[in-house]
Amino acid sequence: MSEQPDYSRLAGGAALGARLRRLSERIDRESAQLYAAFGIEFEQRWFGILNQIMRNGPMTVGDIASALRLTHVSISQARRSLEAKGFVHSLTDGKDARRRPIALTPKGEALTRELAGLWQALSDSAAELNAEAGDLIPLLDRLDDALAERSLLDRALAHAARP
Amino acid sequence: MSEQPDYSRLAGGAALGARLRRLSERIDRESAQLYAAFGIEFEQRWFGILNQIMRNGPMTVGDIASALRLTHVSISQARRSLEAKGFVHSLTDGKDARRRPIALTPKGEALTRELAGLWQALSDSAAELNAEAGDLIPLLDRLDDALAERSLLDRALAHAARP
DNA sequence: ACAATATATGTAGGTACCTACATTGATGGC
DNA sequence: GCCATCAATGTAGGTACCTACATATATTGT
Image 1 (cartoon, each protein chain N blue to C red):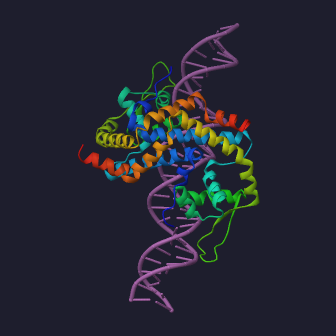
Image 2: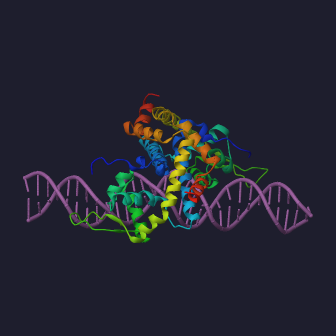
């Protein structure tokens, strides 16, 4: 079984989703390995949330979800695990009892300080990869825009109607 | 909560994994919606496997895994569900009893014929998106190459060592 | 005032992958 | 010939998301 070609690569557009997934899996996995190498118990899905709270102070589930363009469910689930580990706690909003803003605990603040170097290293490495790939990121922006303009589903329905 | 900016986009390299994941989730999800819209019970993860068998005839789990650059485990799990639905069946290899090549059943062949139009529509739509994004795919190739050259983990460890 | 509706959050269960480990069968050295 | 090792596949359990649905609280119309 010597060196088979990469068919997802050959397939072009047909495998676009698979390729994006494969790359994101790899990046998430290697990020996890980096934390493990330093003996830090950290889940990559926490990154966006902690990053938001560090920038903006306590934020609600809904606000974090729309900032990160994820569902509120993902944020809610991540909060539960962050809370279980003691890195965040929930505040109460005097005006609206439905809102329970997420805030860092002292332990959470210590974690963000401990991780600052690794986050910088990951960010630098990603920037390096982006440069070696010929500045991929602006094209991801444009793909986001193209999908916002017209969804893949809409496009595919149109193509399927008049093939 | 009017129109928040997309922070994963603003974050540049730091959120590269998250962005790739978000895009792949979206593409997978909308593909699933397309199949559902036509009342066809099809899981997107089956695509690469059926595509390989259609091109090459019966293939083993291991060969499909290396062609698609996925683990044998993913292929093995997908086989189980494809087999349960009656779309594929397992052959025996006279020379090596460990190998159990996966082959299409007549029902599986009928499925591939039924889906040919939708697959073409998805492929055309992805090509259209790729063009609107400024020809993203060659840059994904280069990102794959850059990671093969030196992993994100290696790079991040180096950056972390001398910040 | 209060029902109808909208918003914030949560739970259950699903998806497409993964790592770690187990099992079975082939193969090479002695 | 047979044991050690390697190769092909499978199982258990995990990850970072998701949709569909449920609950609690606020807001709006009459």
